[in-house]
Image (cartoon, rainbow, N blue to C red; front, side, top):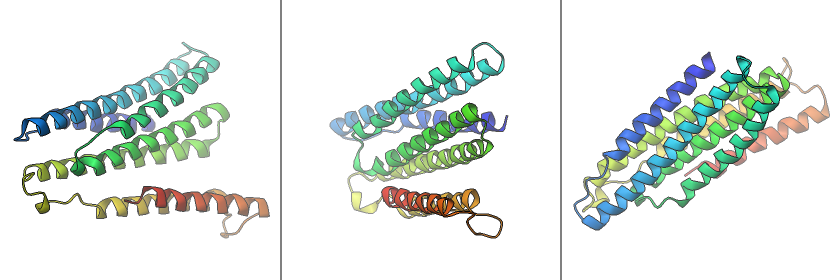
Amino acid sequence: MKKNKIQNITIGIIAVTIIVLIASYNYSADQTKQKGLKFGNELTQVQQDVAELQTKFYSEKTKWDEGDITKEELLKYYDEHIQKFKEIISRYDRLTPPELFQSSVDLFKISAETQLKSDVEFISWITTGDESAKIRSDTQIQEAYEYENLGLMEFQSAKMGIKNYDEPEKFSAPDNMIKQKVIQISENMKERCDTEFKNELGEFNSNQIEIEWFNCFNEAEKWKKDHLP
């Protein structure tokens, strides 16, 4: 129930994003206006495809819960889901946003990537029954929502800059908020490493577990470096 609630909130944010995008371009120059409209329509479609894919993802789980499909059929669909999701995410890189909108596109992409990681953990939970995978999935879907909400804020900021497009020096897309969010999420990842691999005394029960913690910690650091603007 909690998972579906968070997922519905996420899709709601996507819907708001789509509405904003459709009415976002009021450039004075026709060529610039056409470029903006093309970008807006393409980004809207990507966001809409993400929303539809996620709706289907959870509806298939409901079908399984109700006995309409087998677990094998559900997992087969989830394999296809992962491939489709990766293809949709790749479309963010093919967009050609006006410069001021690049940071918002980056955030929408990170949101989708985080959502995909959540889905992978959710599938792991379905497959193995490992509750820790469910917890990671819930955490990551909340992070995806936060990224998407931040992306919408960036988009609105860029739109304000567009109003002064003839004097672009008056506006610069804010990076500090993105940096803070990336650092925060990286720290959250490190905390999860500690929770998963350290015992109650903050120590490791074996050398192998310490190696796994070290790899987990390094992955969080690498993620931060890859996503800092």
